[in-house]
Amino acid sequence: MSDLSPPSSRPRLVGQPLLYAISIFASLGVFLFGYDQGVMSGIITGPYFKQFFNSPGPIEVGTMVAVLELGALTTSIAAGRVGDIIGRKGTLFIGALVFTIGGAIQTFTTGFYVMIIGRVVSGFGVGLLSTIVPIYQSEISPPDHRGALACMEFTGNIVGYASSVWTDYFCSFIDSDLSWRIPLFIQCVIGGILAAGSLVMPESPRWLIDTDQDEAGMRVIVNLHGGDPNDIVAKAEFQEIKDKVMEEVNQRGESRSYATMWKRYKRRVLLAMSSQAFAQLNGINGTFLHFVFFHFPLTFIVAGWLGRDAVLMTGINAIIYVLSTIPTWYLVDRWGRRFILLSGAVTMGIALAFTGWWMYIDVPETPQAVVFCVIVFNAAFGYSWGPIPWLYPPEAGRRAHTRCFIMPLTFRSKGVSLSTATNWAFNFIVGETTPYLQEVITWRLYPMHGFYCACSFILVYFLYPETKGVPLEEMDAVFGEGEVVIQERLDYESERASLMSNHSGRTSVRSRGSAKSANRGRLSRLLYGNDRSTYQPIGDHEE
Image (tube, rainbow, N blue to C red; front, top):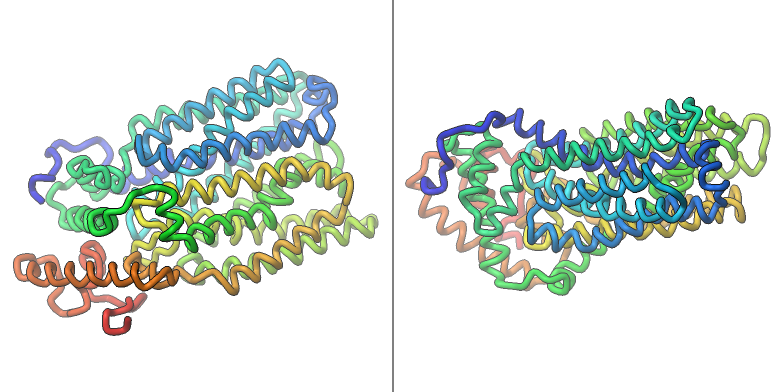
């Protein structure tokens, strides 16, 4: 691979500093649509906002809030194709630019319909960002950081939401239309920073290698590993990615259409889509994203809190919500995806039921009791159904030395785009109907979504496989998608193991002490030698 070695000159940032810089700028993407989701929660209750828009009713408010999801739904479907054509970096830039334009339209709006246009345009940007950022982050992160970084993305989203709530609170003290225009303008600033940063961020090495830009892909990998073109770990990672591309493209020789993906990976696609759907129906992105996230101040008003105090309580709750997302960074690869989702569903269902009960009895203790139930609900969602549905589609299980993606590289962006589109579709439906349902069925809204929590528990318990620590080579067997797929994989692995065995005498990188090491990727063997204490793959004789 000497012909793929990059030039000797190094960029200013290499290794860990480069990875951290990439993570920060990529996190601005999830921060951005978290901010945009929450920024409306405070301003829709402000007197100057109501006066400017002539005291909009619940339908107008619901449309103003939820129409962003309609725009996001449109571009999230297209983002898979766009990401494959122009790359992850280009899609990130376009998404940030479009979002910034939409934020400017909202900031300088002249009326209801102009605000609607601005929300839709911002939604276009959000759809691109919410699809491509998880893919970009997972593809550029090293294997020993990928799981935690994927969960950190969700934390970045909630930090964006919390920032918007506190911005709304402090701006509420301004006695003019600036009280709601300034929070909207901050979107433009953040979007502009992200767009500028994306111009200097490296492209995903996996996309580069998948599009036959091997030298450029190798250069990015070398920079991520410290800038040494002779680094054996960087070379091994390049070769492992190349092997995956050759396996998924050359060995199969199939088209990359949505139809092919659906035919071969139907169960995986449905799993990713259902996880996002239930995250909206039984979580913050369901009842509480559009009535508690977007309309959180209204929830506290209904519960007995008034005016600015309702926004203040929302801000305090947002801080607790952010903190609840942090333990999952550590627990996701130790407890597994299933246990986290199941325990989260139970806790959220109980909290929702008690929220409805306290609102039903309407006693003097109701405001404080509702606050407690909401905090419990938020903490449970932030630890479970918040991050895991975003982790499943682009990356569904990474333990130490494994690279575990539900969707293979050739279909990854399309699979994630469908799951993200599901997210925005259910967001729009719930956001449009929740203000109306709150007036019609009042307290019953909360146990209704508690029922969805029970449904999600049943679905996860009986249908969701545990992907923790399962390498890509055995993901077909985990999902039980047919003997043909498995046999093709085994045939390829048998041939590859034979070639690697012949080559082992000419390299000093591989361990000589384990006959099973050929079943693992090059990078895994370099980093972890013969240590199989954390995961034992399925051998050919076990099939």
